[in-house]
Length: 160
Image 1 (cartoon, rainbow, N blue to C red):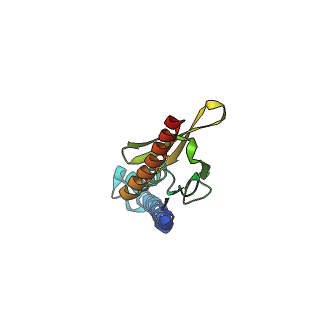
Image 2 (cartoon, rainbow, N blue to C red; image 1 turned 180 degrees about the vertical axis):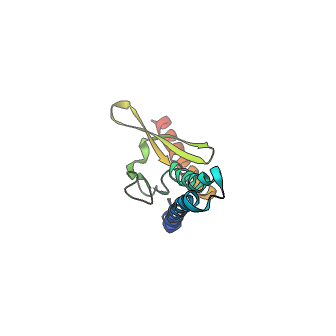
Image 3 (cartoon, rainbow, N blue to C red; image 1 turned 90 degrees about the horizontal axis):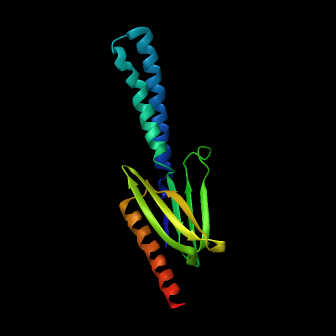
């Protein structure tokens, strides 16, 4: 199964540009308010604080683009930001039989996917992906696909 929200890259880029423009306009309006108009008083700080808060919310929510591919004998996960220099993109590929378990954590508006895989020397590795920008349907499809792989792996380990 393939899952990707890469087609929404232009939407996320537009939102990013819009938020930066709001911050620039708010900063300009703040300095204009402080030097010339003086109508708002201390509330003029909201002209900078609100856009800055929205930008922080947008980036703290995590990497916007998530891609998943379970076709073949390997699982491939990719997670990247719309602005490439902001965060290092994540890309992991491993055989399906190494997947031990997964967990989706939801905290307020943020969603994270934690994947536990087996490694050499009988150790486990936990991989973390930010999936806040997936829709409910995409999230459900991802869970179904990963559950299927985990179930298959458990059945194979019991039969050994």
